[in-house]
Amino acid sequence: MEYLDDWLYRELSSLAHAQPLGFMEMSAYFVGKHDLRGLPVLDPESELTDQLKLFRSKQMWIAMTLLLSLATEIENHFRFSDQRDLKFIWTMFNDYSDIPKEIYNQRYSSLLTP
Image 1: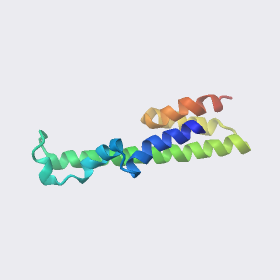
Image 2 (image 1 turned 120 degrees about the horizontal axis):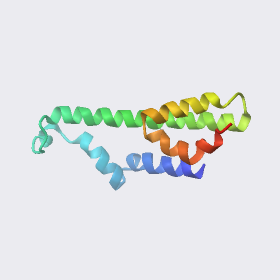
Image 3 (image 1 turned 90 degrees about the horizontal axis):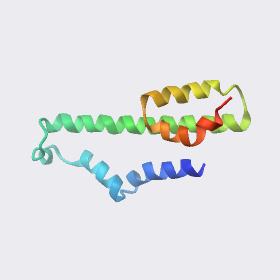
Image 4 (image 1 turned 60 degrees about the vertical axis):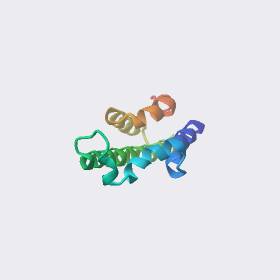
């Protein structure tokens, strides 16, 4: 659980508290379109739109990973049903994003073995 707490703090707190790494990541979204004209990008507006889509996608994967982590911890504690369903969802998530892989490999791969 300490690892999960560290992972959450590292990923989300730097954004929420505008720490240097989080501030640099978020600053691109607050730069005006006129400021992007000086950058060597073919279309600054589409570049900004693409970056916002990537950011939104990353945040959705983080949220889904947190929900799946919570469901897995609850299932592990109370043993409501077979854990194969959770293992399947983790495997599916891991095929589509690297975000859940880190947590799955660290905590849940050994926890969800039959």
